[in-house]
Length: 91
Image 1 (cartoon, helix red, strand yellow):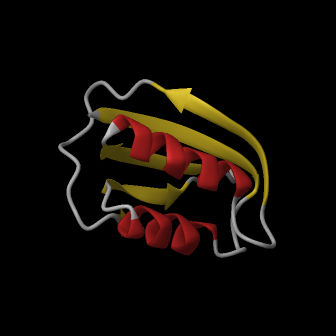
Image 2: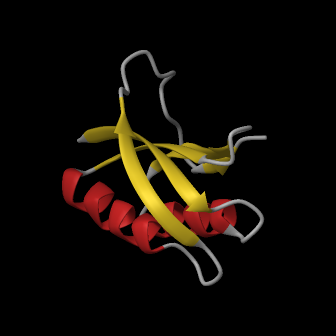
């Protein structure tokens, strides 16, 4: 099992990125959340089987049509609250 926290930057707000992320994670039965940040980035915390999390991150790196992912940076996942299903969008 992997718990991963990432910051995604680029043109990722206002283009359906959080919805795309949620739907991708739910199809893969992953736990976690996605949220917009004030600095224009999107933050994601995800948990699941290693190979499935890697598949999810590959999809996130490509993003939906209309998005442009410039960087996907792993962040420290220590101290995260337990991640739950279904994967959700935080406001």
